[in-house]
Image 1 (tube, rainbow, N blue to C red):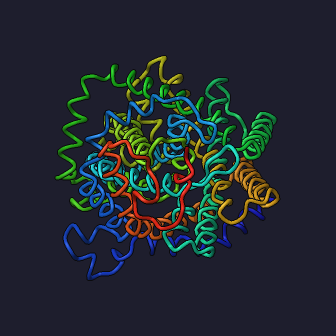
Image 2 (tube, one colour; image 1 turned 90 degrees about the vertical axis):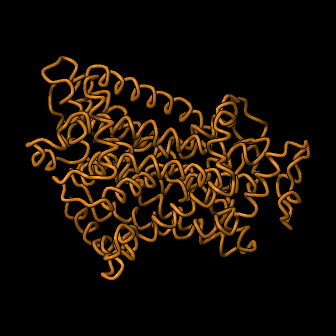
Image 3 (cartoon, rainbow, N blue to C red; image 1 turned 30 degrees about the vertical axis):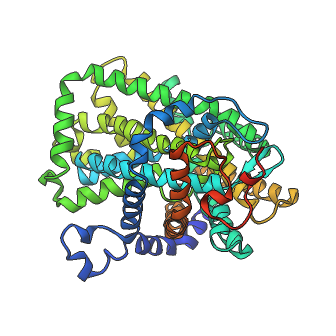
Length: 510
């Protein structure tokens, strides 16, 4: 069995250089790389930043001027006859947006670019909120009803924006499903590994990779995935409605406790972040562009604004106007980066491990152990060290689990653009279960298939190159919908408001 895993890993060895090429283009060209600052920015990052800047300016800083309104919309917990409540849609999107990258990505960014990278994560998120607003508005405009559910997102608005061509919808759906299925094994792997780690911390005994406990955990995870996969969107929202608040509250409280225990380090944190944003520490041999690119890239990849990968959740909501769900999704980026990622940054920066003589040993750790080592450094020789490590691992586990749930659920929604046949939808559900089981089995075997995980990076960059042009094509509809929303003239939102010639679900709304 182990040999089979290694063969699978080897088969996909070609993916890493292909993925790196697309992510780095054109920084992998000498003439471009030689350009100061700009030469550090790949086309993907420029597209995402540019898209965020464009929508920020054209919507009149909607993410800031209507932030209070966004919070009021979130207070609506009532679901309609069709669709889910705005709050449920927010929690569903946060299930996937707030993932392991909020810990691993931030730790990695600070490791490479220093604390200043965190400032640029904030910067990219401020623009990304406008992008998330715009893609959610498109998801709402072009959503469709299916029984007592709404379905929509990237494949659906792409289908409409490209002239309602069936091939466009099918290709976009297939792209998302492939991307999600390639990400699922890593999340299954992370969930089982973190549960084993929690069991070891709780018992004080190292749990063997292959043991009765590990097998029980793995079996429970597979059964849970089956229940989620075949339960439909309302089952998924019931789960995310419970999990997301728990993981967010626990994470916030644990980090606030660590901050309270290390209040004397707060000034150092802010000095390190703001100073490092413009003059990175020489210990990394970094230039300004390295800090900038690490913060921007990790920030955009963490909150996923502009990738279209969370637009399915936005389409599920029963909103009174498309722009309302756009505002809700902008808050999702705020939660992800300004709160969760910043809290991770507090732990990593305040621990000083990234800048001490022990930095070499710290770098030698994996990103999660590196993060946990930073947390432990904030409670040296304290009885709180083990409980805090347990709670942080618990949060990481839920981050991975909710991310897995989101990918399985959104794959099913995307599949509806190809076919709504129960047999086809069930086949996508079953595929998600099997691939989750594969990732879990890799964990039991103690094998981290790095080449296989890199496929998700390739899928991610391909979705960026696909989604951003679609957002720009659909910009006129977003801006017209925004003007209508701001006008508050009492007229209902219809296809006529945005000048779209084909009938929309909104035209049938009573």
